[in-house]
Image 1: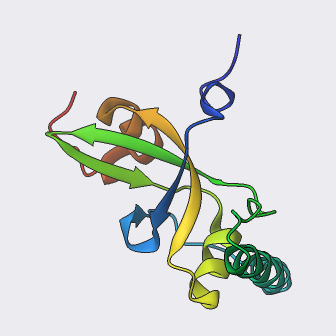
Image 2 (image 1 turned 180 degrees about the vertical axis):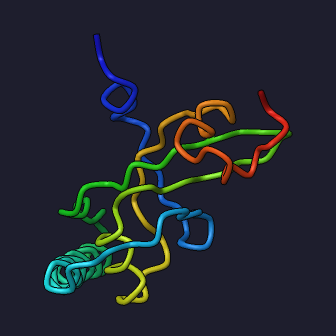
Length: 124
């Protein structure tokens, strides 16, 4: 039986940094962030070269960030609890869109992660 995370491997989307809610302040290893920035630069150069030739670029070497996707009252909410180094690398590189793996989540499930800090207080 697959876990909730491995079951959604194909649910990859690009989200803007502004769409992501990050409830946990990151603790960063800046060497790791800088290494990821170099990877992003290499990948951007490959994509630009492919686009100039009319081809589609290869997907990024960095794995997607796992993002809990909550749908409530017709709105989408995206919560990233991990991926802090990848997100900071995108931010520092000026790359607005981040490759994310969406994991469906209910407001009630989100409360298990966030407790009283959940924005969905009325969902028991």
